Image (cartoon, rainbow, N blue to C red):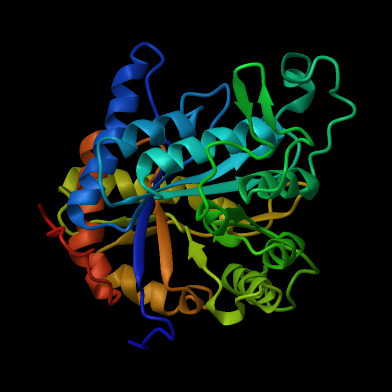
Length: 351
């Protein structure tokens, strides 16, 4: 088995936080329990997705605020907050508040673009400004400036008995270097690098350019080009942080029934990986299902994985809580070590 050029240094996981509309509290509690389990297993980070008007986490900042009070070490991230739904000033305040509450463990990941199904939600979201809203990179720049302490107003001082600040409060000085951008294109990777963000890559990229002469575009090669473009334009160069987020399902301790369901899940999703999908030409990576040894071998052969030393493996959307417990346990006790990772100090894997 070939060795990776960058030994795996940080192991994380990502969950959508699915819940039943009839019992949303149980689903949210399950998400918090998985974060607590991740800390006991020695994971370096736990990340939540954001879903609006669906049955997944709609308020990751609130969920991670709760998680911050039930954990002490594990880093907490969002992958990602779509900024088209957010006011950058208000979001900056929320992020800084949770970062302070967590002791500096928050890793906010964001993305840009119009909200999903914008024509159907714009009247509820922006009833007076729907046609004037800017959903491009400028929205991220505004958030970065506010998080990093640039003035939000030209007024500060005392008025009557109240004291006012011209920068977002609370201000968390380290948060600005822990801002992540979810990029799936060369242009976004370039922009994120120039603006000193960290880069989140996932199991989806844009298949930019023509079809390859020998078949469909190569996912790993496209993702690798994004990572290299990002680092080429980042002030930290080769040291700039990149995290990869493929869907990974180790089966070492799974029951035969679980293995069968996992394989069926991946098989249903496999056809979309054969060619770019839709007008945006989105290319999906296959889900990785198998023993930790098998998955490690496939990852070592993945050109983009060989360029990173951080991962936030994505959990499948629709599994049961006990499935996630098995998958996370195998990730921490078998797959991580097979990739050269060691649990965080003070947390015995398997605890």
